Amino acid sequence: MSVPRLVIAAPSSGSGKTTVATGLMAAFAERGLAVSPHKVGPDYIDPGYHALATGRVGRNLDAYLCGPELVAPLFLHGARGCDLAVVEGVMGLYDGAAGQGELASTAQVAKLLGAPVVLVVDASSQSRSVAALVHGFASWDPEVRVGGVILNKVGSDRHEVLLREALESAGVPVLGVLRRAAPVATPSRHLGLVPVAERQGDAVEAVAAMAALVADGCDLAALEALARSAGAVPGGSAPWTPGFPPTHPSRPTEKAPTRARPADNAPGAPAPVVALAGGPAFTFSYAEHAELLAAAGAEVVTFDPLRDEGLPEGTAGLVVGGGFPEVYAAELSANEPLRKAIAELALSGAPVAAECAGLLYLCRELDGQPMCGVLDATARMTERLTLGYRDAVAVSDSVLAVAGTRMRGHEFHRTVVEPGAGDVAAWGVRAPQRRLEGFVQQGVHASYLHTHWASEPGVARRFVERCRTS
Image (cartoon, rainbow, N blue to C red; front, side, top):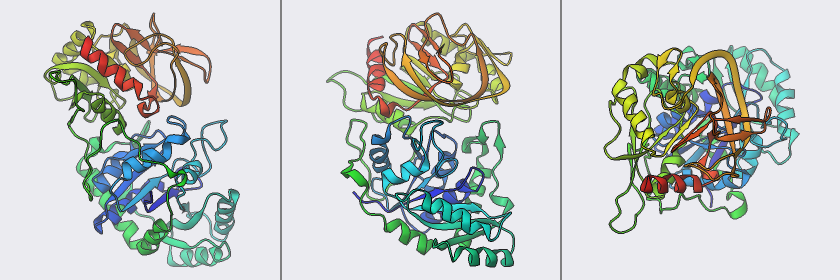
């Protein structure tokens, strides 16, 4: 299967990948192309900007969480029916999981997809040296095809001339030159960019500015031609499916639904309602999770804990993913009716799956503010960043997995939960040190670990089955 595609990479973080990738997505979409947006790695925030740029769900491609064998199928699933796909890389082109070689790097994903790479270089403090930099990245791995470079933060016409002259000897064409531009700047916080859901109109304006910057400074025709030079995706991969036939129109505008249509249940059996936390406080969720739950027979209904005072009607299970509850602690605490409803649902034994922000929300309190009180634990912000991939094994049976199930996850937070594990823990984690982590009690599974359920579809099936029987 062939999908025109580009990977937007950089020598390092902070070079301008997100600006270029998002601007490129929006610029192509404005020209009438159906653009499929993707992000390498576990990042939840950048895909929100990608979705705003394209009108489609932003999807992640993570070779660590899902395994290299799922990268191409997940890509093809997201790109179904599209004219072109843009994949934003992570960190530097060759940076991957610590101590794991190329695993989960942008370079590995580019090779798995057979996609040409466009290197975004911050040229603000160099001239002739840019040729050595680009040559090094282009020649480091012969299997990685660097098809062009976009020079970012160029200071003047004279600066551009010097850079172009230097790059003539590197054998990599210059496909764009971008000047420094304040309007495209997006505010950051302790875990990266501020999510789209929190910025509303400002995010729309920022994406429009990115599109204008890229359209003005880049050769879109050459970039599209480079994307179309990619052949079939290697390995003869078929698109991933969550288990039910996808119904994509030929030129889709895919939006995250508030209600995901369930797959067929047994005759006469109603679809159990799974409530999925959303809104500004809980923006971290992989689109495939809702798709897997729906494929397993659930009706997935999104609700906003900042605004909704009750769970969706008929809720049989609850999924609360990641986000920034610490930013909204006062508002979440003030919504006492919902906190009580969640506590009552958990007490009833209904399945509840909570990751990271969801874990904090289920605690007794967060930074002194009362939360749902499902877990006998407290949470607080700290200055210390906990970040990294984790190998984990389920240490007890739960609504998500049987004991002994191995999964890979990712931690990314500046909070601490005390105690770090309940009387019955969720996971045994091997790195950075061996420890027990998370809570399993009645139908509750709560943990700091972000996991990608596509790597273990049985998680969603098990959760929905428990919704039917609890």
